[in-house]
Each structure stands twice: as C-alpha cells, then as structure tokens.
Length: 286
Ligand SMILES: NC(=O)c1ccc[n+]([C@@H]2O[C@H](COP(=O)([O-])OP(=O)(O)OC[C@H]3O[C@@H](n4cnc5c(N)ncnc54)[C@H](OP(=O)(O)O)[C@@H]3O)[C@@H](O)[C@H]2O)c1
Image (cartoon, rainbow, N blue to C red; front, side):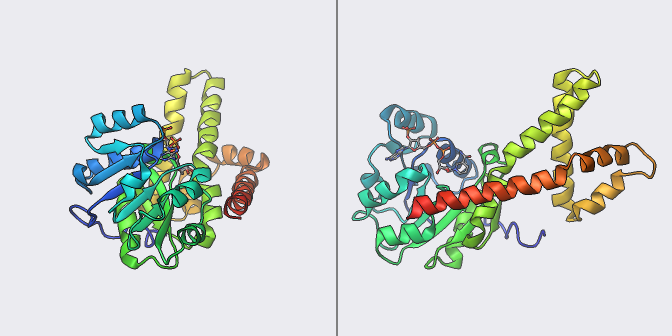
C-alpha cells in the first residue's frame, strides 16, 4: 500500500518557465499558495486568471503574481497550464485559447469529470495532458490527489504534476479508468468522514461530554487512526484487533456498528458516488 505513493521529492524549483494558472478560485489559490510556499516556482513565473477583476487584484496583492482576467494573454508562451476551472467552463476555455497555446505546453486539469481525451480532442493536437483529482483537505495541505496521464503525457510530466500537488498533501498515480472510483472515495470521502466525526461526537454528547470537547476527541481520533494506517502500512483490520481487548469495551461498540450496517453503508456510499461521477463524466464529455 505504501509503495505506490510519494515518489522521491525533488528539491528546488520545478522546470517551468511560465505557469498559467487558469481559474484561481478556492483550489487554484490553494495550489498557488502551496507552490509558492514550497518554493516550487518563482512568483515572477506565474500568470493567474479569474473571471472578475477584484479577485485578480486580490491575488496579485496577496501573492505578488501577475493576475488578470485574460486567459489568452496568460497562456501565451506558457509551458505549463494548470486548469482549475469549474468542469462546465473547460470546453469554452480550450476553444478560447487554442490558438495561443504552445503546442508543447503541458496541461494539467483539476476539473472534476473532464477527461484527458476530451482535452486532447478539443485542442486538436497530440497535447500532453494530465488529469488530477484533489480533495478539499488540499486547502490545508492535508489533501489526497490522484493523478492520471493522458496518452501523450510523459513520465516527467507525471512527476511534475506530483511535485505540484504534493505541495497540498499526498499524491498517487492512477490509471484514468479509476477516476470515477477515486472521485467516489477520496474526493467525496471528506463529506462521509465529517458525518462520522459528527456522529461520534454526538455519542460523546449523549454521554454528557461538552460538544467542543467531544468534537475534538472525535476528529483527532480519526486523524490518529488514519495516520496509523498510513504510517504503519498495516491492514486496518489488524490495527482494529490491537484496540479490541477480549471481553473489553471496544468489541461491544464494534458489535453495534456491525448491527447498524456501517461497513455495507460506507461501501454503498462509495459505489453510488462513483456511479454519479460516471454519469457526470458522460454528460460532460459527450
Ligand atoms: N475546491 C476543491 O478542493 C476541489 C477539489 C477537487 C476538485 N476541484 C475542482 O477544481 C475546480 C475548481 O473548483 P473550486 O472549488 O476552486 O471553484 P471556484 O472557487 O469557484 O473557482 C473557480 C474559479 O474560476 C474562475 N473563473 C470562472 N470563469 C473563468 C474563466 N472563463 N476564465 C478564468 N477564470 C474563470 C472564477 O473566477 P472568479 O473568482 O473571479 O469568479 C473562480 O475563481 C472544479 O472543477 C472542481 O471540480 C476542487
């Protein structure tokens, strides 16, 4: 499990002369902040775009990057284009900048449900394209981003995408055919986990714990248990067995969870969300 994540880190700036960061909203700003904070790219190499000038002014004054509302100007001469637009805006953007885009530019798209095939098709040349599926904890650098390559992207392109998204958390490289499953698991997953945190905290409240204390106990317990899985590389069942003393308290709690169908419910949640992701991909890419 550990072997496929986190390739060796590279020190210093990524080899990019000009980065066009298109759609610098929540995710785009998180990436900008992560990349500048990790000193992956110099401030002067970034040209960011958004839809509204006041947002551009905010980005320029906060980060010192060039920011505006002109996508064509931003992509002109860029060797890396990072697309953080809403999915439904991607096609329009590609049409808009097609003529200004360098043929040898690498395009990394974080737009949910937009496939590399769609981008390649819209650009009309054998473009190097990478698709990334981050999740919201990326915004505090504890994210999980899955990275899939298009048919013309190279190993070096994949490493570069990993270096970029590693500035916001962990990365894994996956085949694009798994992106719907990944969407249902790690992209939607934070919402499932918030529900679990909230429910555990309610258990504490039911037993008389103050709500703040209960929520902190619950959230840190999930964080710690997750870290145990990632750091030890042990199967979660084995770690569960360590907590579960014979005739102790935990086995009684586990019995309740089994009776309530927690496992099946979570499995079904991932499957349903992945099915919805597939529907969105089909409607987005037709
Ligand atoms: N947020 C996450 O953690 C997360 C996680 C996984 C995937 N994603 C994906 O990332 C993408 C962006 O999500 P988000 O949450 O960051 O959305 P967001 O905050 O709404 O950001 C979208 C940005 O695009 C800008 N924009 C709109 N039209 C534009 C255009 N024609 N040219 C240039 N910029 C334009 C908007 O500018 P204004 O601000 O000026 O309106 C806004 O800043 C989505 O495809 C989403 O699926 C996000």
